[in-house]
Image (tube, rainbow, N blue to C red; front, side):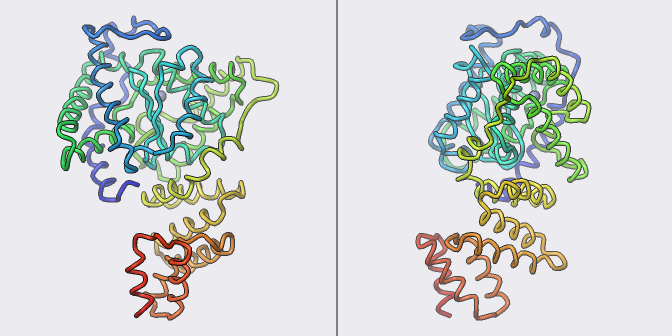
Length: 403
Ligand SMILES: [Zn+2]
């Protein structure tokens, strides 16, 4: 999980990179003449495109490395990655084998595609959707960027070249040798990409990718309205932040009611399957073991309203209730205004009622009562150690119990 100081640091990095990567609709030069990529096609290494691929291949090696998988940047769940790969294949047709997807441990709603077929999907995105159809919508959209060579078209823009120079620079300092400060640079680079700061496409490219995604969904029989639902969610989240959120999809993907309208209008021109696939249960089964961890990441961003919204959405599905109540408590605990502490305690208690074996609320309640100098903290700490015997802070907690 990302630590808070890291998020702060990334935010500054993001600000630094943003002016270089705003959406542009002009200045593509001859880029419009680039044809769609064909299945299995690879550029020659001597070409400009081949050079770009080569650099991004290096980035991909770093993402694939054990270090990135170490838990901090990339999610270690081959089964979930395989599931996502299957959904990519349903919407990507013959391009399926040209796309590699990796799941990045980052709490923002984001996914990104690179010219060489490297696709990154954030855990923050996976947490916010509730069906395979919604997943297919974003994956299909990203595959659209690949097939239409949007990444390359951007690289041919002079401004975007500066972005690439920055990426290459960071890769170089981030890969040799892979220790200490250099490792942190590499993490920063991957995180920067994961946060969407170099993934800004033009509005035309966005429209093209939207259409490509919808057409892939129609062929695969998915519920077409899922695409519009994703954007409606983003708009809602943006409104909750007073449009102040500048990271991830918010910055790179112009989301407006007009976009939702266009998606619905285009969907009407396509043949919707008689029994549209949503696969909510299949999707849930694939991600359910991660919901708690992913919520922890979102809670750490301190966007209280949207975090509440995410939790309430899952709550309505009546799944993972103990975890949901615990993290709802964590929102109020972190905000700590007016009667927030009492509200938090109620949610921790509710969490224990939902699942008495779930250890986290015992720890938090123990800490709260310890601070209040209320003796009942000991009982909570005892239960915490009982249900989580391998807890990292076990010796500290036990020293509190023995006071
Ligand atoms: Zn896009």
